[in-house]
Image 1 (cartoon, helix red, strand yellow):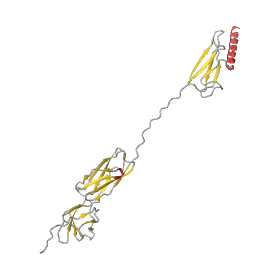
Image 2: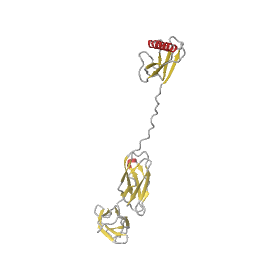
Image 3: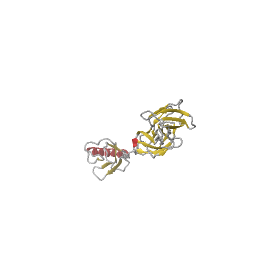
Image 4: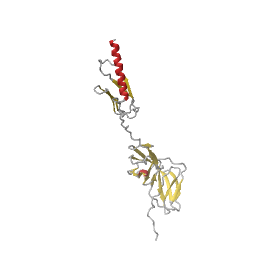
Length: 283
């Protein structure tokens, strides 16, 4: 009895192509036939013993061209027709540089219409939602750039269920801008205030100069002409220069003149001057 083989061979599996050469896999010894959608012949080739095949068209095919590929086994049976779109699957990102908080768009092109495409950003361990290629073999991935993305270069990969891995594309996540710093609060330097107190009940009269806050001072004693009535005690005015240390043993901030040799001498001098002025006025 003659045995008839009625099972058709499996469809050939083409590989992505830029149009200059068509490749794929099939059953060893089978004939691969390629035509255009209109039935125009592109070429034929035989599947190699290792199951691979290669066909070079007479002229390169344009990207986007749809060809029909069929496999015929050595019993003359034809496989299902496989439409195949010419083009190398590629990922293209819209923005070469992004910052944290931005949104990036990656476009998948030259995939096979209807195939599912899985995208990833491996450097950030980010899996993108699976998409389906449109009739032109394209799809779009859109994703946010969270703060977990390290600054530097990142790559977008995509794999089609029919086309396999696509040519990836990269983008840069820029360094985050430094946080604005608040200038440290500065305390305005205190301006020393001066208090002069004259006491005439002490013997000799006391003139006390107080500086607030206490700072090292140099004491300058200036006698002033007096218009006070006779027998009144002249007033001694004391001024200071901040930043200069006082005489040894004199505390910073409070400078008494009472009981010091300087105080006694100045007081005597002023009294003498006052007495001479009164004498001159009487004459």
